[in-house]
Structure formats: structure tokens, C-alpha cells
Amino acid sequence: MTDKQQESADIDVLLSGIGDAYRYGFGMDRKDYEQALRYYRKAASMGNSHAFYMIGQCCLEGKGCVRNVSKAMDYYEKAAEQGNTKAMIALGDLYWNGIKDEVAPDRTLASEFYLNALDQVQHQSDMQNLPFAYTRVAKCLEGGVGMERNIQSAYYLYEAAVDALHSLLPIEPHFDEAELNAAEDGLQRTAGKLGQSAESREKIQFS
Image (tube, rainbow, N blue to C red; front, side, top):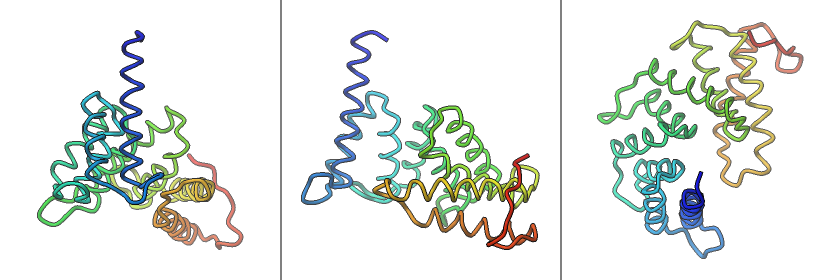
């Protein structure tokens, strides 16, 4: 990478970070989604994958702009093409759940996004996003969606996700407890299917 390319890379990360500051109100009196979106767009014009993902979030939630699910998915896809794990998971979630009159549910396609996300986080040793990929692939394994049903493997992944999410909880400022609840619920379900009690379950090796 040339000095000019490195400078450009540093600038897009800085712009994206300023966007995060406005979105979450870091060091400010209030959140400003419109300003956040302006900075994300500047960073995205330089190819920043986090900015693409965050623009997708803004479009999906209608923050700083008119809600537009189609545009959100377009931005998620751009981020996912660059290896952004959060965008892969977001696309998977949209296809898993569907949105009436906007996104037709396709759980097999969702499972492909989840597997890609898991492969990406493992390749990058991305411990922050690993548990989110674990939970979703476990859900597919539990139901036999897009892959062969394997309750033991699902149990192991749910357990790994719960452990990792508990580690993230104290340090992640925007932690969504719904993620932890989903992992714990999955662990309880698969433990029951394997005939184990929540108190005395034994670790089963992932196969």
C-alpha cells in the first residue's frame, strides 16, 4: 500500500468514526442521525465497508433518512462483498424473518449468509462478531435449514455463543440483550432435546 492509499484508508476510517459519534451521541448532547449519515456517505464513497453497513442500518430504521428496506439491502450487500460480517448477518436476518410486502422469507438463503459470516469471523479471528454468527448457524443446525440437522453441533455452538456474549456484555456499549436471550433459549432447547438438564449438562464436542 502506498502512502497515499494509506492516507485515504485512514481518512475513511476517521469519517466513519465521526459518523458513529453522531449516530450514538458520543461526547455530544444528543444523537444526530442526519449528520451521521453525511459522514457515513463520505466514508462509503471511499469504499469503507463499515460505512456501507451503517448506511444500510439507517435506511432500514429510517434514521436520518426515509425508511427504505430495498436500499438498506443494497448497502448491506456492498458491505458484505467487502467481507463485512455484520452486513452478512443483517442480510441473513432479513431473509430469515422476511418483511411483509418487502422481503420474502428465504431461510435457505439466510443460512448461506450465516455460514459466510461464520467463515469470515473465523478467518479474521473476529471475536466480537463470532458469537452472533454462532447463534445463527446453531439455529440452522437445530432446524436442519440449509444444512443437515445436527442437535449436538447446534448445542455446542449455542453454548460457545452464550459464553462469548457474557464476555462482551460488560464492554460492549450497544449490547443487545435479545442476542444473549436467543442464545440462552437455544441452549436450553437443544439441551432438552439431548436429554440434559440446564444444571448438569456436559460439553459435547462439535463435529
